[in-house]
Length: 193
Image (cartoon, rainbow, N blue to C red; front, side, top):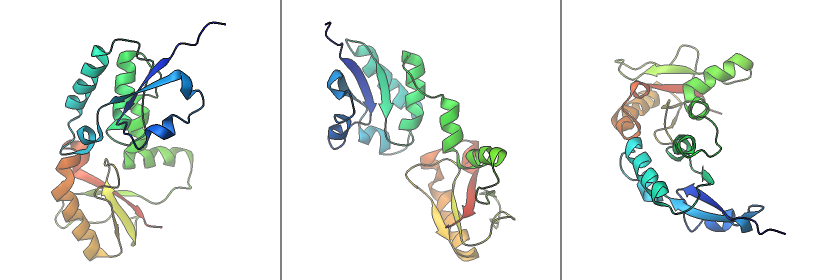
């Protein structure tokens, strides 16, 4: 019987604390896990996706062996890097569009609205408006958070107009760490449970 080839699995943000869990995956004895970017590279300071992609590509291009899988278990930027790198290196992954549709809080609610009426009320908040206003169809208490963020960063449960305005002020102040594009000018709200 031929010996099974070991598969090289690159894990974005792999750390020692999570390696034992990966080693318990069925078939792990034929997998060799490699760290691709550190937690610090992924989470400290401002996230600059092009730089992260370049760092990851330099590691993968320098690897002397096959790149059989690229995976991750963290949210943004890992969830975005996996499909981008997988497309480049020919490994299986979902599409970047499907990841963004799910992670973008407003877009995902629009998608949910297409298939069911069993979703929370939601709306957009214009961060440039003075004074900022909650969406017409969403009452207090509610969650206010950037349309694109991760690890619950800049997410606030608010119970009244005063807390709403304070949350919007904090989002305005901190949004540049998450992104500077069009999505940064608005946030989404939905009722708090």
